[in-house]
Length: 82
Image (cartoon, rainbow, N blue to C red; front, side):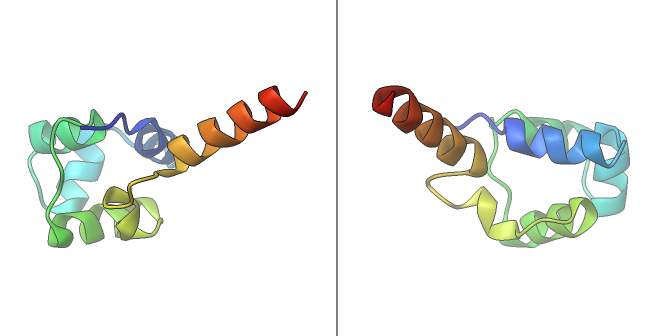
């Protein structure tokens, strides 16, 4: 699975804990933690619930290139270009 540092950043920007996001999303805290760590992939329903709570497009969970990956690719490109 993938590292979801972008999800952690979204959660921290909202000043929420794992437990906060899980409760509002209607899932168990342990399940949310595994999703954020990239150990589990959420169902579409759960992805939509988390995305609503943290205010982002739920399809990011299913994109091959998440925000973080796109950022790293950009950094590598800039580094090579210099």
